[in-house]
Length: 255
Image 1 (cartoon, rainbow, N blue to C red):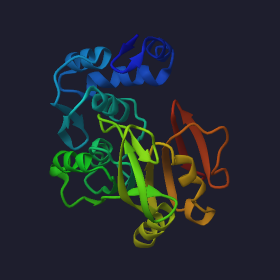
Image 2: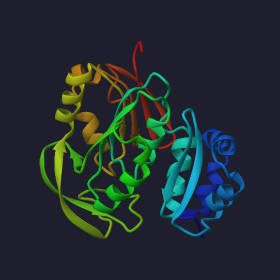
Image 3: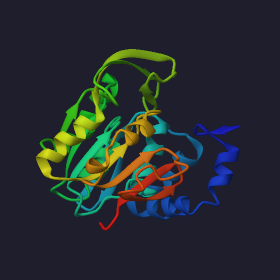
Image 4: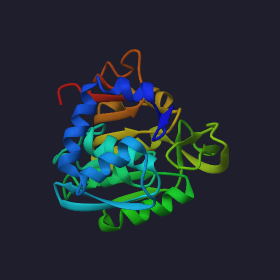
C-alpha cells in the first residue's frame, strides 16, 4: 500500500528516526498553514499546483509546488534540515537544482548568499525561475547536467520532475549538455577562494562526482551534502562524515 508515493512500511520505519521528529517539530514553526501541510504530507491529498508560504530568517517566502513530491522536498529541506545552512554560508553550489526549492532555502538563510545552480530539464528550469523571482541577481543558472566530463549525455526523467539523471531509466529521455564537475568547482573556488556548501542530488552520479574531487580542491569546500549512502568516508583526508538518513553530510576537518 502506498501513501503519498511512500510504502506503509517506509512510513512506519520513519517513525523511529529522530530526523523525522525534527521535521515534525519544525513544520509548525516554518509553514504558514501547518495543519494543511501535515494533511497533505501524510496523505498525498490536496490539489496541485499550490503555493505554500514558509517562514525564513529573511521573512516569508512563497514556493509554487506542482505535485505532492514537491512538498516532500520542501519538508526535507526546510524542516528536516537535510542541507543545513547558516548566516555564514555565502558561496553555495547546487548540483541538481530542480524547481528551485533548495536554492530558495539557501538564499533565505542570509542576504549575502549567492548560489550557483545546475539543472538541465526545461520544465524544471521554467518553474525554478518563477520560484526564485524574489532572489534575482543572487544566483547564476547553467542549464546543464553535471557529470565527470563535459559533452552531451542522455538525461532520463519522470513525470513529476523530482527524479532525473544522466543515463537514468525513468521513462523519458532527452539529450542535454553536461559539464565537468571538477572544472566547475575549480572555477568557483578560483573566483571566491572557497565554497561554503556543495549540494549534490543528481540521481546516480553522486558517488562518481565525489570521487572526482581531488584532495586539494576538497580542502576548499567547507560542507558537502550528498544524496547518497556511503559505506565509508570517501573524503576522509579532508572531511568528517555524518550519514543523516539518505543524506551524506561532510564537514571540513578543523572548520
